[in-house]
Image (cartoon, rainbow, N blue to C red):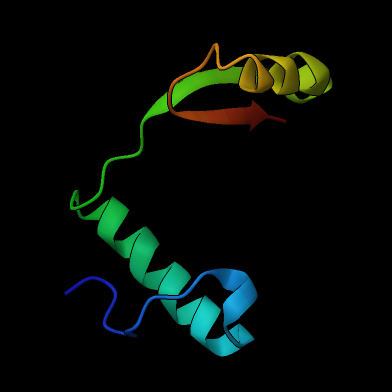
Length: 68
């Protein structure tokens, strides 16, 4: 069962251990196919400015992934 560490709280609202448990649950749910991650765009790390501009202009729907 994903996210048994209820209530799920944003990182700024919880202690480090709860954050780690919630993050582990999230990544397990992704790996098991319960949660889909929509990658809207990929940019090389040296194009961070262009990625930021795309996000601000709402040119990308989904996550922006920066490749190292």
